[in-house]
Image 1 (tube, rainbow, N blue to C red):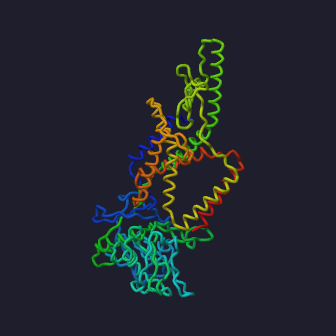
Image 2: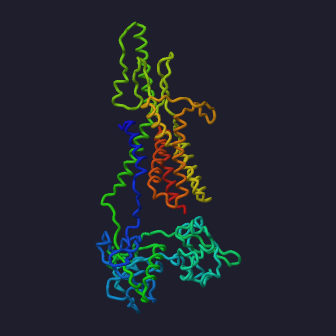
Length: 560
């Protein structure tokens, strides 16, 4: 069993580490692309995701050769023509060196594009880049555009503008979407980007700096609604039609890597290519090195997450059993007092050794010792005790904090309220209120689990006696001591600072203090919840788990 002293030392170490741990960056995009300014030094590095149907790239840039860039021919811009047909035109490039094809997304599958790049055009690699035009389709039956999907392709909450239809190129709801509009609805230039030109706040709220037309028209079709486009790395999935149904083997052997980059990354690459262009369609003197980003052989983070879960469960289990330890300590205390009183009545001068002290070496919680012949208990923040005598000089144990025993009705209402809460946040789009609830709720948990026990521990070590500050009946607070007030100020001060970072920093999750403190706050909330809530019936546990199962299915697979 982990002692209280060890628990406090570990939690304190985590708090200190949150201030000195170096920044950790996600490696979800598994590939990288070095754009070479010269044969030896990269000018910029782009991130990319890889297709699992293609050849994997070696790790590290030095293990790969540079390749020139090239675009598809004009009669096959998406590489979606029949693979078995001979191309009517070839790719224009400066030399016979290995080259990588830059192909827009859309019209056909990722695997089909990769096969065409390898078989028809002899490319050494293919980079498929995101486009706004790939989010649109055209229904020839109804002669209307199939517009992108709300909260799947775009999010109006992140930015919304009304764009004059006269500023768009050949735009009409009953005509196919013109890909030339992509340049007007994306990019970092405020002058060229119609979305940022219509709203100064769009650049700040929309991370992609690109917008999609939603199909909603206003003012007699003079304005078209546009919302912030999602621009994420995506998984290049395999094409099921490219597999032999009888054997399950792929129809074509792919020997080149296939990568995907976002609209933003392609905008950066296109700007570099245009700057280096010498008039040829191959992209001038730009060369790329494709490689797999470094990743550890063993995923240590999985072990850390497992250890954190076990640690939280162990601490919560220990604290939830505090009432049993309270009863045991009360029995031992009363037995000691009875034996002491009997010896005093009989005139015995023998000092009775406290039975509980024999077990204190194996426990660090609530030890009972003697001072000047009187039992004395200690404050540890979990089982509070007071030095009050049965007759004015002996100690009485105080019971632990109140607990709640869950019933089947509690389990049902818990899931109902959780569902209503999530639906309310989704419908009214008040997502930031979650951060406020999290900060203040977890601040109280940190106070009870870490801060207050730590202050009591320090006070006991320094022989500082806690004193009453005031007594109030407001919210049934009762007696408020100096240590309690200091604990409130410290814990809610930390929670307030975390909340300030959440609202003021663009990417607070890149700051070590923010995400480590967030994990500590969440762990403390879990510990407090498990400590307070009692599941004394397998029936209640079964109802709660069943309700949670359908709750998860509903929100993950059914809701948008």
